[in-house]
Amino acid sequence: MTVTHHVRVHRSEENLPREDQLAYKIAEVAADPVPVADEVVDMIINRVIDNAAVAAASLTRAPVSAARQQALDHAVSVSGDGATIFGCALERRTSPEWAAWANGVAVRELDYHDTFLAAEYSHPGDNIPPILAVAQHAGCDGAALVRGIATGYEIQIDLTRSISLHKHKIDHVAHLGPSAAAGIGTLLSLPVETIYQAVGQALHTTTATRQSRKGEISTWKAHAPAFAGKMAVEAVDRAMRGETSPSPIYEGEDGVIAWMLDGPDASYDVPLPAPGEGKRAILDSFTKEHSAEYQAQAWIDLARKLHHEHPELADPANVESIVLHTSHHTHYVIGSGANDPQKYDPHASRETLDHSIPYIFTVALQDGTWHHVDSYAPERAAREDTVALWHKVTTAEDEEWTRRYHSEDPNEKAFGGRVEIRLTNGETIVDEIAVADAHPLGAHPFARADYIRKFRTLAEPVLTPDEIERFLALAQRLPELTADEVKQLSIVAKPGVLASAPAPKGLF
Image (tube, rainbow, N blue to C red):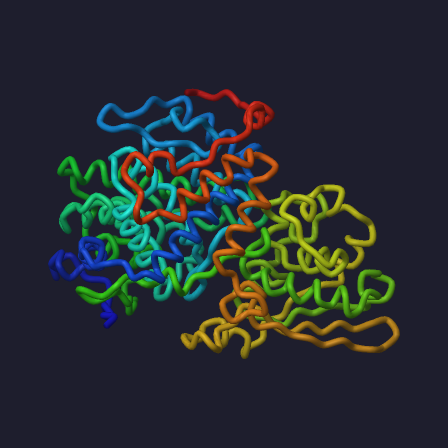
């Protein structure tokens, strides 16, 4: 059964034993050699496929190309075989921390992979690039990789359930650094003490402000989780060499909780698996059918439904106002409650539009669909009728939708809301949606066939048919892969694809 750990700030003179510290409890979970359940293995395979899908779709985008070029400018570390880089030939490798960096940016760039939302936000698929990179470099087999990924998901999701970072404007990747370090510890079967030091160092180096997701959102949005993964790899390396980390990193009087989160009087109850309990948290996460922030997924589905039922809504002349009644998080992060004028700016960056539910709902309502490239194109955002309708869309917090957003009951937990559309003729259209169609409780829950279809759709423009089949065959045998096969768990672009991408020069 799950064990709930009460975490509070301790004065230095209290001398909190490390065995009672959250970082140590995380390390104990990571070091527990519990088997991975079959349904968890299946979902890990799905997410490995999903990560590769969204990475393929982003191979030629500038941030991904820049990160890839940085990785290519670094040689393989002398103590291992190196790790692959998405898009590059399998024999073209780099050191594991730089592979974690490049592949992490590729996975995160389009905001198109999995999510878990609770007290905090998270994209737990961000754990896969650093854990996979270390597995390739260190010669780990598929079974070890599965165990490592299961830990990465478990720790990030458990921290996300209980500790809010955004409340204090700390970026959500502060939960990713510790989870990736823990996952690598599981992968390598490291002792508890080593993982404990790595978790503390990873947290210490990955706390940053949420300005990366505020106002005019920059390309750093995709780099932030990649940086956390890179720092996790380096933290494990330092810990393996016997180096120590700030302690207690969470509970210390000058630690993260006291000065970055709820303050010296704060406490949290963090659920973690009990000794011998399986790591199953990945089953509580969900992927995206659409390339947009997760809290926009259900709204896209509702908008495309309304497009077909009420085609007159596409014309701003017919609409007086559109109000999306939704949760606190949706209203204040991607809605009008953020008070970001950029969310209504037709010249805003893709990253900003991705976090604007007024924009996303408008385009999905007019087009009846959503596309990871076309829906964000500058000419699409600047269309006169779109801008006119877009500026009639606002959000409002609704206490009931906020309550459902935070509900622990999976049958009640919701990420949508109710839309009220007032027409210029005096009529009102009201509709609602609780979860996205692809959600496990949605109209069309994602299964293995959907993950494979998503991969094929996104990979076909940049991978050859043979390469698509090679990767899918390999990924679906994940727990059985030999160490040599794990080294091939990447995607290789068609000739000329990477050459067409920007190749910026920098310091390296």
